[in-house]
Image (cartoon, rainbow, N blue to C red; front, side, top):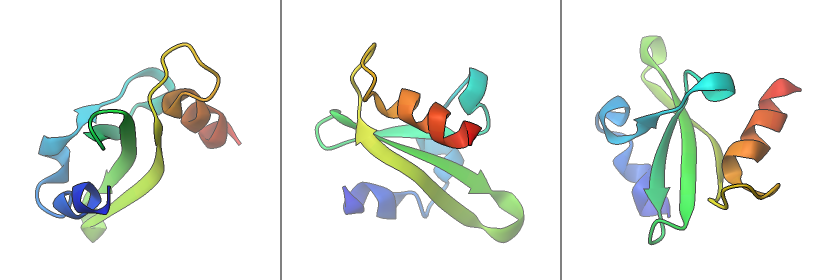
Length: 75
């Protein structure tokens, strides 16, 4: 998974899928055989890629990485 995060150093906004709704402004890329997602934000002014979450994709499950990120970002 760290290899996938390292690849975000080059053109991170072109690698990930832009997220929508409550996660607008964040991107997601697949990792570890597409079972995990890396959720990140690109801060252009500072040339920083901030990884804000990594977890399994389980659509409809309370432990789905996107549902967890929505809850964390609301706080």
